[in-house]
Image (cartoon, rainbow, N blue to C red):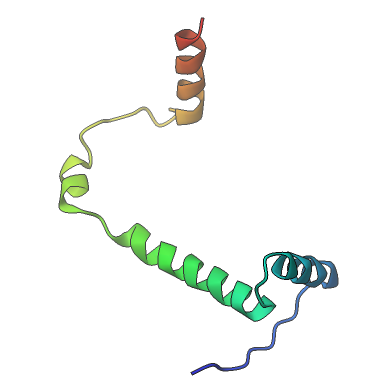
Length: 81
């Protein structure tokens, strides 16, 4: 059952969203519904931890100041020297 919802958004965002919806042949309502569905579904899936992942939790210990992005950058620089 569909139900109405009133939102207050910035005028420029509304216009951009309308243009996007029109260019993708979808109503603005369906666009927002799809976004909210994806957003709420993603949060539920993030909480689901498989038994395998749980068993691997804590296997590796890293320093508190470890930066994965910097480590990956250093790895790529070394790899492509």
